Amino acid sequence: MRKLFALPAALLLFGAVHARSTTPGLTPPRRTVSKPIDPRLVKSARKDSAGWIYIHLEGSPRDIGYQHGYLLANEIEDLINSMKLSLPHLSGKDWAFYHDVAKKMFWDKIDKEYQQEITGIVEGLKARGKQYDVYDLVALNGNIELSQYYVPMLAEKEHPGAGNNKAPGNCSGFVATGSYTADGKIAIGHNNWTDYMGGERWNVIADITPQNGNHFIMDCMPGLIHSGDDFVVSAGGILITETTITQFKGFDEKGIPEFVRARKAAQYANSIDDFVRIMTTGNNGGYANDWLVGDTKTNEIARLELGLKDFRVWRTTDGIYVGSNFPSDDKLMKEETTFNPNDSSLSANARHRRWDHLTNDYKGRIDARTGMTIESDSYNELTNAKEASRCVLAGRVDTDPKGCPEWGWGPYFPGGTVQAKITTATLAKDMKFWAHMGNPSGEGFLAAPFFAAHPEYQWESPYLHDMPAYPWTLFSAK
Image 1 (cartoon, rainbow, N blue to C red):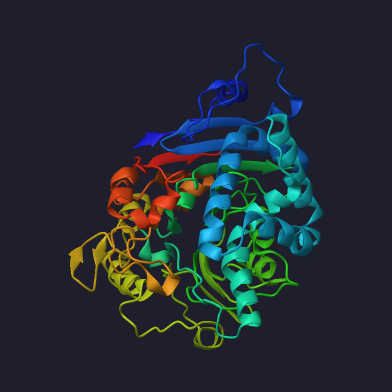
Image 2: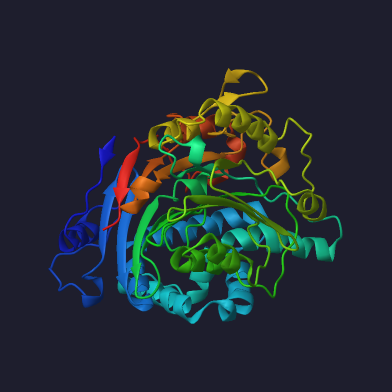
């Protein structure tokens, strides 16, 4: 295990500008003459380590955005280009559609502060020769709720029964406190399941000191102003993660985008009550999740199950809440999903069963190291064996002959666990968390043999590359 220490901002900025990009297929801009550093960049920093790109952003919303766009210009362009390829295949809608929807439906619902930040990202991109507008960035930030909630809703409206109703069930996570942890304080962990083309780009650690609100550190994709898979450590003492409610249906076009509410909660929530209020106010149903939250000031944890019409909150100072994409509230499950809790073949239910055993086995011992072990677990309770499949916590669908049909993922679909994060109250006090890029079970993904064995996914080859399993690395806010 290696610790990442903050280096002086000027040195890190020099490395960010002059070093070769770590994103495959990209070439950094040529620089033959030294140029003065833009004053907006002085407080920012970038450092690449163990598959991650750490960035520190600080200042006004527009300055934070400019720093983000400038430091990650190549990576943002690469991500947008990969989505221009993947979205038509996966959702039936092209980038122009999402750009148009972002402009018409989302822009006016975004807080002025975040409009300025997005504008700053565009300005930073343009300073690096990248030509995008604010609606490209809004489409990027809202891609999950638009492609997986809004588009199916449109299909359902046009042809009742046509909506695929297969909102994916990505991620395995927990939050624990009291008698469940080694020190009686909060521990929280999460691993991110997604399609590999997107997942290999979910590799940013953003350390943000905003002009207003709390300093916070989170994982995210390039260009996102929110975490997206949602792992956040806040100086306000709030720890946040989530897992998606699978097979969810519903979306409100008049509501506030989920990515706006999630960012606001990361920046401004100082209590569990704050978090619940922010996430439920103006809820549009996009990216319906079971949110797992902890408040290190009170040692209390909570689970907010947030649909569109329904939500429920559980809270405790002695217990554990887990998530593997199963809903728990009977009313929400019946009214807003097609989820069957009795179908043991579903990934969500198989992992739920594994969670039941692990929470019992590790009760009283959960800390950063055991949390890593839990989020790396690859034991299938249905087959009583370790395996790489959709039914284990650190799952792989690219090796599963059944795919994950409840999410619309076919046999051997290139998706599964792409990274993981762990922190504790003690680490969070110093704004630190452990992060692992690649499947935390230690198994890497190799693109060439995969495409040779599964040519039906060859269309992804321009943007899907090898995904090695890097070591766990400790990241610390500047």
